[in-house]
Image (cartoon, rainbow, N blue to C red; front, side, top):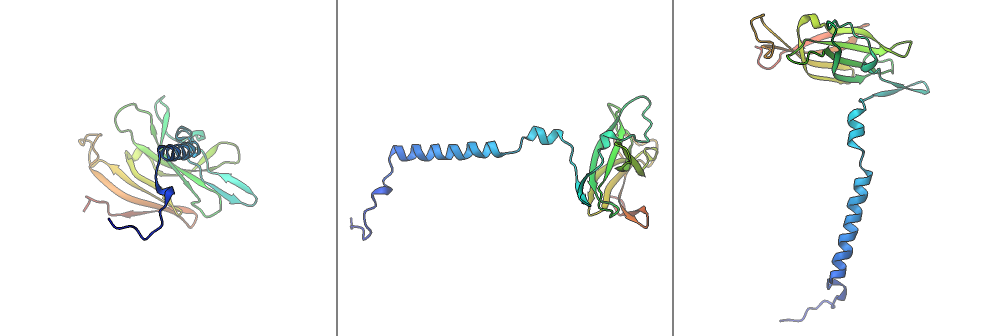
Length: 192
């Protein structure tokens, strides 16, 4: 065996005390990281809110749980299935778009898509109906990005088609133009 040309490094000789100190330090880092994580149960129960600055006050997006939707459910409650917020009309104040249907318990109840704005009172108000539940549509791939609302509308070609299994789909967007929401339709996969 040849002698090393490097000096003998006594501090590289590990002892059980070194391993114990390293393990304790790693445990402390992991514990601290766990304490700094957000509480997942708190974020799951809090609805997503988008805020925007308007003047010197912060404006919160309308909460669909507080809105009165023009949806007839025959004595049942309605359910806000999906929601997204954003400044749709460029006024610096966020609106909320909500996909709402009757709480039927089973089956696929038709959905409505509504745009909410903050009313003069405390409750938000519906300012536009983009999809009326009377159209018997279900909504998927719903999003609001950069002032554009997008969704895939799922429907039925006839009354003979089972309500569980829509056989038509249409990819649509809505954008605020000239004082109204303008709908644009794109080809959806599977529809030629």
